[in-house]
Amino acid sequence: MSRRKKIYEGKAKILYEGPEPGTLVQYFKDDATAFNAAKKDVIEGKGVLNNRLSEHFMKGLTAIGVPNHFIKRLNMREQLIHKVDIIPLEVIVRNVAAGSLSKMLGIEEGTPLPRPIVEFCYKDDSLGDPLVSEEHILAFQWASQQDLDDMVSMALRVNDFMSGLMFGVGIQLVDFKIEIGRQFDGDFSRLILADEISPDSCRLWDVETGRKLDKDVFRRDLGDLADAYTEVADRLGLMPKNPRSDGPKLVN
Ligand code: TMP
Ligand code: ASP
Image 1 (spheres, rainbow, N blue to C red):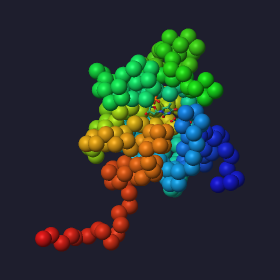
Image 2 (image 1 turned 180 degrees about the vertical axis):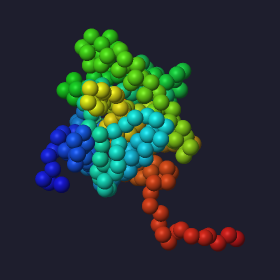
Image 3 (image 1 turned 60 degrees about the horizontal axis):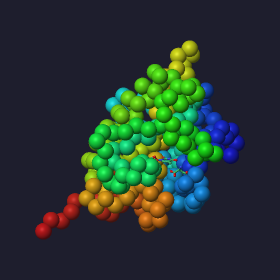
Image 4 (image 1 turned 120 degrees about the horizontal axis):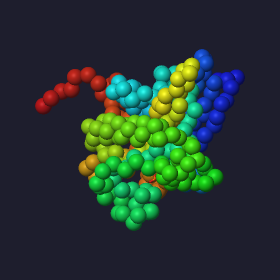
């Protein structure tokens, strides 16, 4: 691993050159940051959980025809992905008011929204990823009108898929962030879902109790982050079973 060429290191992941042209290896770190890295910690096991969870979500999205960068999981912390040029926008979809929307508009957290709201933030840590409008995006040519239309429809499909998947295991998808990239194939290019989908980039609340099962546990000091992510993975059936607890059970 040490001899591979590092292409990019972000706050939670590292990208290495892949084995074939057009591929990269995405490595999930245990580092957790919040508030533009003002708060930092290392959460043992987080990278392993997010690698597995993102694999699960991306495979499901592939199955319903949402193109994405995932090729295959290589090991506990790494996955092989298609290389893309990331559009410098964070695409956020919200179903329920929380976080920065609640703060910006004074809407109580937990208030259901009348319809899913899609927002764009300009990806620039030094500016704190500011919220931008379609006017900004078009004027500064971060994306074309066609790209914007494609991004909104992809984000809404991801929202429907993820909301249903989570609801099936008693979790409400409050909001999430995705990143989208341009994949080149000769003279052609298309937009595909990239980065990751994990509890780092979603708000996930237990349907019964409202308990938070996402990175807000870390941002707001609400408990053990790895426990929360493990619970999400467990509910989705992704945790290895204890062999001794398997097998037939005695029924009284
Ligand atoms: P926000 O309410 O803080 O704007 O966050 C909206 C959603 O986006 C939430 O699910 C967390 C996610 N998110 C990220 O993945 N990365 C970020 O840098 C931020 C600010 C939010
Ligand atoms: N923006 C990320 C988050 O809060 C991490 C960070 O800002 O350091 O989810």
